[in-house]
Image (cartoon, rainbow, N blue to C red; front, side, top):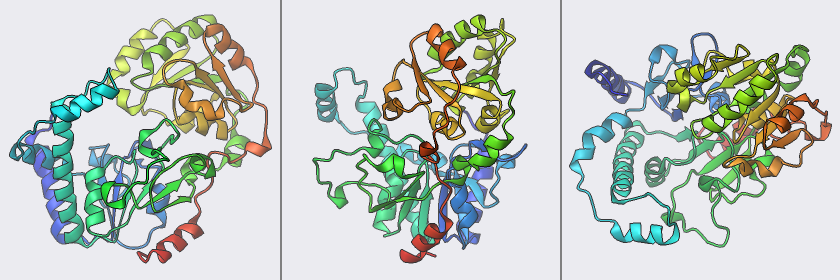
Length: 399
């Protein structure tokens, strides 16, 4: 998105105001992709911590640029995106052909070239310098982040400043996720790897088999994913018989094609095709694709995932965290066996999960009722542990 000069000036003024006039004990890096009411969005991954923490905080937003939609008052759009553009011109590109050769020798189909590596290295250097200055200048006590564990410049700066970084789980972390599954045969030297200091998971389920070289992992929970399960199920409308489809940019086409067949076969069934935020710009394309089917409706952020789950009987996906959110609310999960569907292999054996290859199997799976299993209650998500969080903050001396 091309920004107007006026927008850049406003964001820089907000940053300068933060820099010189705002106290900041804790710095948050939010990605506000979830609706909290009709007009505001928030980060449901960091929501519990923001609601619990005592002391002055500030949030650098990384997703929603429209400040009228921000739920948290002490927020500005992360200025790193502007600073990268400004300072990028001061760095000379390097020759990484030897590294490119090493990568392609192991991965023949790799498309990583010299330009891509230069971009990564330059961004890292800018991020490191920028965040090091911010953390030292503002005397930040701790940093809280979400989003994939890939902010390496920030991690390096925090380590240099001896400031703890706490990452909260944002989605699927499994043996197929490179950011959370380090080789167990390698002893990683602390000074050669940049990671968060601590990690908060949704529940014990996610961390049993992973090797994440952080100081400690806490099964802290998340109230927004936990979502008051019993109340939600009690209030669930018995007429909720729709099929929710959890899409994303890489899975959209395969899901669309299967849904077209399903919608034609079962034209009495409501289908809610929920686009991932990285697909919002493609909404009209999908609306046009389903134009001949009155029972299919395409959604961006008009309704939240939970609002759509409340009117659905089952969810269809290839790979999505929404599978676990649906199962938690006693809604059947249907996995389309395409692309990276095996990322969900750790739940293939659960009683309310179906794997399908075609529309016939999808119809059969959709018509199957959810089988209650009390042993699996709260398997994926537990309520945020406020007492444990307070104890954690006191123990590491940042409360």
